[in-house]
Length: 197
Image (tube, rainbow, N blue to C red; front, side, top):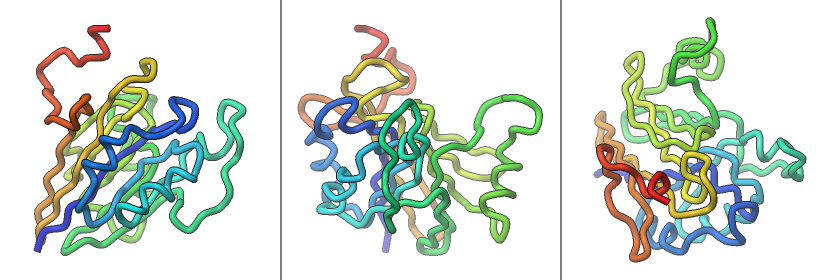
C-alpha cells in the first residue's frame, strides 16, 4: 500500500496573505499526512492543514522571531528535526539543508551527521530557499517543494507545492504549480510565471 505525503514550505502566513490559497487544501485532499518545511509564521495555519491530514512541521527561523516576527509557541507538531519511518524508508524533515556549493564545511554530509546521527535518512524534505528542488545528493533524495506564496522570494503570487509518494522502499517526489483552477505539474524546462511578471 502506497503512502502519499503533501509537501509545503515557506507559507509566510499571514505575512504573504491572510490565508493559504484554497487550491492547496483541495490538492492535499486524500494525502496520508502533510510535511511543512517551516516558516509557517502563524501556527494557526497548521490547524487548517490538520483538517485535511496529520501535520509534521519543521521549525523555521520565521517561527523563532527572524525579521522581528512574533516568536511562535512550542507545539507538538513542530520540531527542528523530524525522523519519520514510512513503510521501509526513513524520511527526515527540517527547515534548512545545504544543497548547493557553499562555504567550506557547510555540506549536506555534515548536516546529516548533526541532525540524524543514528541513521541517515533515505529522503530529506526541507524548505527555506523558496526554490523547488528534487535531487539525489550523497545517495539521499532531497526535496524542497518551494513556496506556495513567495516562489523564489518574489512578491505574493501562486507558487509551488509537492508530493512524496512512498511504496515500500521506493520514493518518488513531484512538484506542482498552483493555478487559478487548481494545480498542474511543474515544468522544469519552462520559464516560471514569476519570471514573466
